[in-house]
Image 1 (cartoon, rainbow, N blue to C red):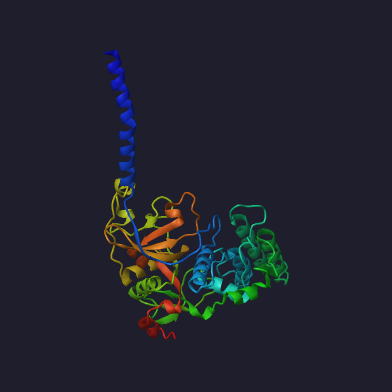
Image 2: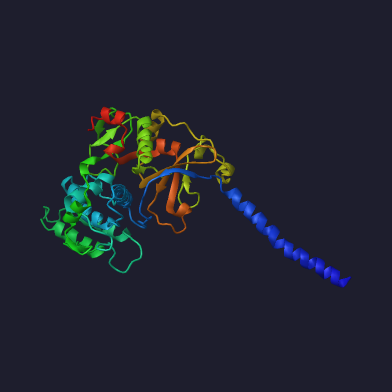
Length: 391
């Protein structure tokens, strides 16, 4: 009888973990509210990490250009983001000084800043210029950006009653200390290149790359200036199209082997690259939810807002849509109920990130929260290109 008792206890203990594991598995499955299926994706390079810098504009656009090199058969390249950043700061500083400080001198920027930097100064590979000088494992510009801003504001105070010609030398010296001196030449596959010659070797036609936006305070199918702080040089070359056309451009691009450099708002509560791995725009606004509703886990796909041109304009004008972050759209997907999502490569690394550093942005999210795009002009449908007078 005693042996039987111990036998029954042993059987119970052996069965218990199986049951617990089954319950755990069931619980894990419940946590995945969205199940994504990729419909179309384009070639791209591995996810990088901008870490503690405001240089998403550079990481996203370099990622986009690396995909363009893959698309055109040039091969896989790992281009240096920090070489672009190093060359952009002096240009931004000159703009800030000449406008007496009435301009943006933050670490942010736009896709055209990368194009302009490579066009004017060339480009190098990551191994040639990492932008890290003290054996760092990740980029951190917190101190550098504050030092640079302090210097520029100090110049503008004109302690000697005038601005001297030496401030740019001082700026470049600080940039060299933090990011490193720019290489005059380097070796690539046994050949010697200057940065400008290497840019020529890559074979880009920079006039093929255009930026688009979609706001009704500017005429549609004309070029305009996008009034966001990170458009620090007041670039007026953004093509303004209706939101339906902007979405059509993204879809046409991906479905024809092109990718898209995306600029937009990521400040929403339900944009989550770390925990959820997706971005959505529910019908009920976050601030209109009860505390219980805000704290509740999403267990299945939720109904999202229908995004109109009017709603885009309202959120842009009241600052609930702001220019926060650039990323790289590399695919189209759908969830288990058929809602369209865009597979988007982020620049926050993959550690502690859902989907290995990628974010799925819903159709509604992209329609509402996009501030600008960069695409190759051939990635635009012919009907829209004609309206924009693009050859």
